[in-house]
Image (cartoon, rainbow, N blue to C red; front, side, top):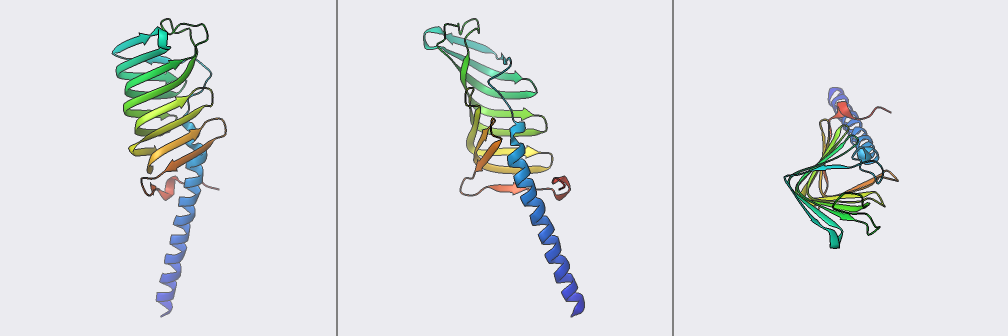
Length: 180
């Protein structure tokens, strides 16, 4: 009976440690999801197979193997629509300010040690809010994986939110959880 109680106590302690690690990682992941970082500041380099500029609409459409780089952040997609401000600059020469980006067709975003994937991604340059959505949005950091249908990251405040497709799923490697 004593061995059984010790085993039950050890199991409860192990479960408690795992839950603490999970909650610690969940808070850490939400806090650190701003590692996925674009900003309204700094140059943005965009490359693709094809570019169509609609100067009168202040829009540029990049298609085929689109890659966007800003500092240490890489965004890849099949298609990217760049909406420019009507501020007297030119979308053709790239001298206009970017208002927002809309990426579609297998969106992949990598910054530092985090990767996020989804079907559609939008980024508002002024508010610095990234929204990644789709049938399945996956956020990974090392061996830790969180899945849902919509990831919203407010770069300025550091707030990140993952909404589920019914429920959010998370796989946490206890050895990778932050140590407090």
